[in-house]
Length: 288
Ligand SMILES: *[C@@H]1O[C@H](CO)[C@@H](O)[C@H](O)[C@H]1NC(C)=O
Ligand SMILES: *[C@@H]1O[C@H](CO)[C@@H](O)[C@H](O)[C@H]1NC(C)=O
View 1 (cartoon, rainbow, N blue to C red):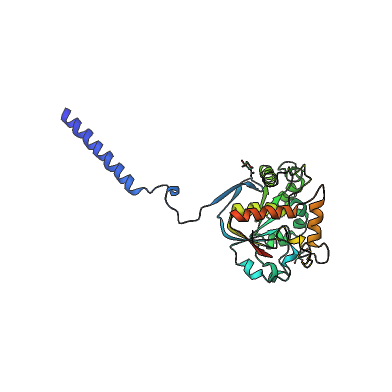
View 2: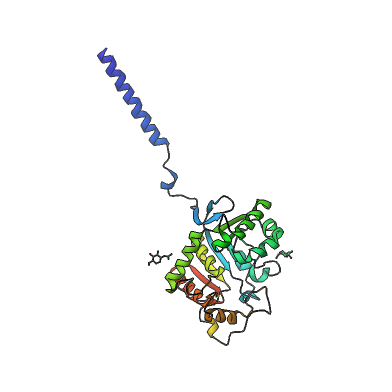
């Protein structure tokens, strides 16, 4: 009886050992420990999807073209080059139709100010139906973008229910505070106390650095550009010819004590980032 018992235990043990060996041989290591051939997926919690609040999740872009709305783009002929980037990031409702040669025609993502949302909503068939592959990332203060009370947020929710296929994200209020903090770190000035509104370009550059391995920037001048009086005037926006002049607008905002964008200060910060990261200013072309 005793011997039989030992044999039984021994064979059971052998079975268990053999089984463990088989498992070790056949079960692959968890995916994260294997050197993956697939690109890793980014999770960006600063951007929350409408209506469910999920973070922005997608593969990183190897190359990005960040296209500003500046009049610098007029006559550039850079459309084909811009369209070759894996991801094309635009600002607000800057049109491509009719400007393809200079600004390209693809829009992977648009960063949109709460103040431009009414323009989006006025042309929903174009932005949310014809261009529904574009991801919309909206920034704004709590009064506009709070998920319970924000007026703009509510209007966007309505648009989302009308066009369920569209991808709309809102910067979380944490992310808004983070962007303020980045401004303070870089300039030594409190964003609100210094009477400053961040520009859509600021939010776009921060998102581009999170999303893209390499960023080519189109239509952003250097911080010293507007000091050089020999530069020919260009419109503030390429799609609003004959209205504001870019450098005049930049200088006016830079000097204003309250409620102003600091386009030139922001450019100086972008230039510092370009010394550390793969950010290239293509048009006008300048070195950080
Ligand atoms: C909507 O936008 C498209 C593309 O920019 C433009 O061609 C069209 O005229 C716009 N429609 C309205 C009603 O504004
Ligand atoms: C601001 O600077 C501090 C000190 O260098 C750093 O710890 C913090 O991460 C920075 N924050 C941002 C948002 O850049």
